[in-house]
Length: 220
Image 1 (tube, helix red, strand yellow):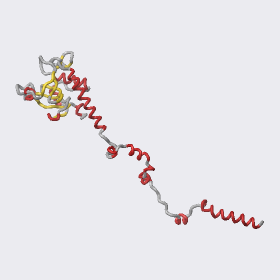
Image 2 (cartoon, one colour; image 1 turned 90 degrees about the vertical axis):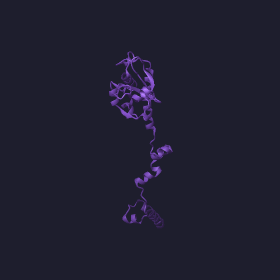
Image 3 (cartoon, rainbow, N blue to C red; image 1 turned 30 degrees about the vertical axis):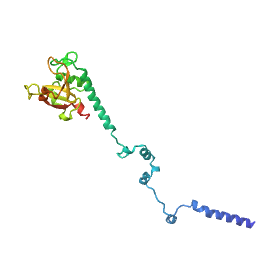
């Protein structure tokens, strides 16, 4: 019987020795004696792909040419260009539909006829919702100056037709540039809205410059 008790006590003592470190509170000595453990800081965690799944997914789904530019592309620029192209297309489309409407001094409506500035004002108001000044001289003072080599469809072209045979006087006529040196306008009494060329001698001598109205200039 005493032997059985001693054996049981031995077993309990051995169990206590084995399990004791598992439940013991850490002490300074045990901390110093334990091997050093590397601590992974948050910045380092972010560098490891498994700890930043969103970043990995976004990079894996992003085309290489976009990843190289930080995910930015020319999509926004393309959208702006498309909008600007639509404005110009609307202007020219409406202007061409008004061909053959007769010239009327002070006219500003298809039902009665157009003068040059009335024609331009009507097209811009109904095609892009822009109200231009009431006469060609005032329209010339508005908008962005454009060189002849940079003219685009929808720009306004101005002429000095009130200064004699070679012009030189005040701005007195306006039309809408189409393309390839051509413009559409309401010329003068007895004529109708039509397309003419800037290369024609009469208009070439009296050409005063081109302007880009604000609504067009803001869109490029």
